[in-house]
Length: 220
Image 1 (spheres, helix red, strand yellow):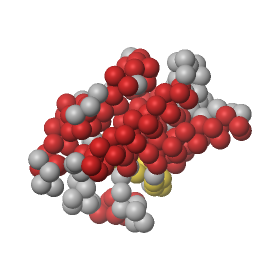
Image 2: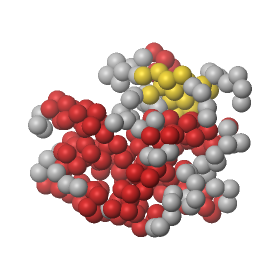
Image 3: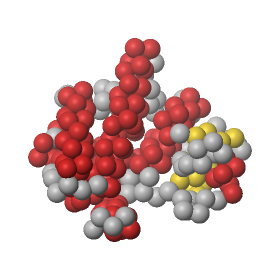
Image 4: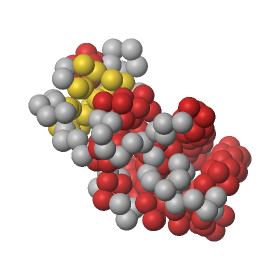
């Protein structure tokens, strides 16, 4: 779609924003990246997402699309000539949406609990987090990607959390690879794709950010 004006309002460490970055990279869409200060929200962000006032927001020819999974679906619908992310079969599409929703409902909240709590609360969050990863590992099985042979919707939903794993491990004092080796091998394999590696942040940088936030919360 030549002539499109595409801008992404985002925050560097956001796994939700990284989803959109992967999807745009997979489709080969050129866009302007606009880093947002989430403590001092810009007039543009408030104008483009007046309901939730959150990133990411994709602005396509002046029209805003909000919420990361909705944005990824939109990207797949608009730039449909290259690298389809959702399968064409209705049942497979439903399955993809189910697992992406599972990632949304489980990984972010449990990961956040790991780094914003300590003691028994943190231990409970770690257990639930690992249980969730084991369910995902079981669904992946021996497939190269969740949808089969090519990178798809569930991969785009999940992979950004990989660069947060080191932060969770550092803060929670546990090792994800020890309990979910196949899932970590899958993540490392996906990083061989440029669309993924260039869209994810450095795990050490994310971990430093999380440790800083924990200090601000009085947890360190």
